[in-house]
Length: 273
Ligand code: ADP
Ligand code: MG
Image 1 (cartoon, rainbow, N blue to C red):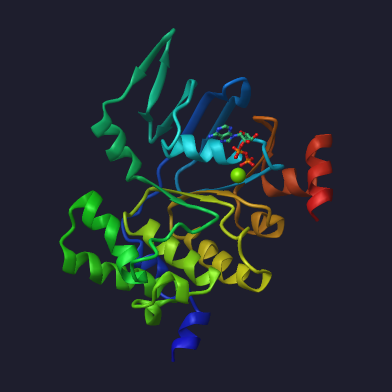
Image 2 (image 1 turned 90 degrees about the horizontal axis):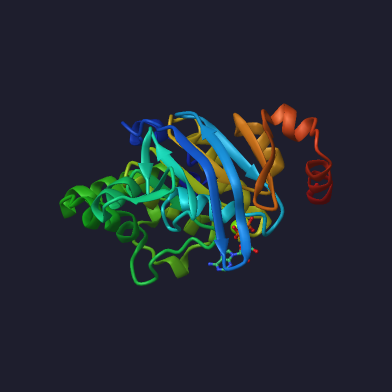
């Protein structure tokens, strides 16, 4: 029954994620400005393979920019991002900025998936086509194989019965689960979530969080920007609090969420609770 399936997105996640071995993410001395606005002011962050990092912080603190530089949607002005020790994009060696060849950048980007607040599905494609598209284009996977894998991934996120639905016929929570399946289709080693539930009606938040919670046990490295503090406490190995383009505080959920040392962290947690 489609509705029962819809309620249980857990079955088989780990199997479907086969081989998505998590990579280490390292950000070193990341600086980024838009004209005279310094958005990242020296960010250092390490995310160990297969762990979950939750990024908290007020609006405008640089959280999205940080994720976008990790996925090479933005280039850093200074500093470096490395995935399993391989530097993505710009590398600071002395004063020299080394730009990677475009081909290498593209190859690296397929290792890092991203899920956005506003889903960004292709409106003219069915759920199944949305999920099958990237493997066909980016990896040259044959159509039949891409479609079979897409169906499997839709089942993993509890939407096997919605394969032929267009995004406009799906709820926000369903659209976001399709977007997660689409990100998984490239078998990323790192998955970035930028406020994945912020655009959802409150009653749809949990169905998306439960898929992410299941992924968090599947061995992929996850970085999640979220205002869902309870969720962060639940799933995160590491919590990072950003403000003003810097990491103000980082540690375990028990340290950062339950016993924040910094006034700005305390103020932020009080405001959103
Ligand atoms: P957050 O995700 O924490 O809300 P962002 O990384 O989106 O923060 O943005 C940090 C700051 O950078 C904000 O002041 C935002 O307006 C600005 N900003 C982000 N992207 C751009 C851009 N492409 N051009 C100019 N300013 C930007
Ligand atoms: Mg943001």
